Every structure is written in structure tokens, then in C-alpha cells.
View 1 (cartoon, rainbow, N blue to C red):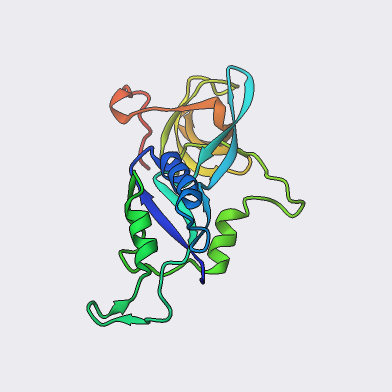
View 2: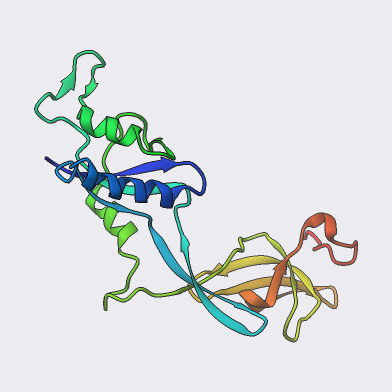
Length: 206
């Protein structure tokens, strides 16, 4: 059977449940010919809090699971009843019986992922084969932040550049009524909701 990679959509927070169910039932139901790998893509990220750095593993596609599976019946080709590619019924029924499974990304007859797409998702590693921990950054351009550490402590500004690989930001702050671009580590600032700002703290539009 020709196995291809697809993306499954799961109920929120049930990625592990779906993966465990599929892998356990592959053996119980003798589905090894139809189902290969089932993976939850993750990445390691670092975050610094209270002066301490820690590394955590997080899902970078929450709500989705990658699966290598023989979905389409190449011998039947097009299903005359639907006019679409014929699926292998045993495979389809197997997935439908999976708790937490919603459907395929791309509809009932999804296109398989291209090899380069699979490599980009699965190879979260540099050339030496070791996975690199990426700084955890939860900021976007135009976010309003308050500096909570360093020489610009207490100033409020707008994020103008985010460097997720280094965990650094460039923030526009106002000093002596002039806009100045300052560098900050991601842990040196915190997001501020617009409604929480005082009139003096609100960034001034130029």
C-alpha cells in the first residue's frame, strides 16, 4: 500500500489522545500495512523568568497530528458515486473510530503533503542533527509593551521588530519627547493592553 503524509484535525487538547489511540489500534487491528508513523510536531523553546532560564517542549501545530497513511485506493481510481478519488474503506473507518479525530485538513479528499513540506515540519534540526532550542517569544510587531528590566525600566513603547531566533525585540519608546529605538531581551518586557495605559504611557502616533 502506498502511504502518504496527511494532517489530521483533532479536538483542542486531544492531540496526544488521538496519537495514542491510532498507534495502539494499529497493532490491535493489524493496520500496519495501511498506517505508518503518527507524529505530533513539537519544538523546544527557551524562556527566561525571574533570572532563570528553562527549556520546554511545545506543540507548534496545536490541534493537528501528522500521519503517514494509505488513504487512497489506487486500483479503483475515481469513485463513480462521488466523482472523487476512491478511499480505502478500511483506512477511513479506522480513522473515523478514533476518539478526538475531527477530519482531514483539506476536506474529505485532501491532497497529501509534498516531501519538502514534510521535511520542513519534521526536520526541526540543524545540520548536525541535534534539535536546537528556540527562545520563546510571544510578541508581534505593533504590540504595546512595558520595559520591566534594564536602563529603560518603566517606559512603554511599541514593538517594531521581533527576532524569534535570538529572543530579542526592538521597541520604540519616547524619551524627552523623541522616539528612540531600543533593544530588549524578550524577558525584559511585558505586554500591556491598550485599555490599561494611562494618557502619559500611551504611544504617540507620529
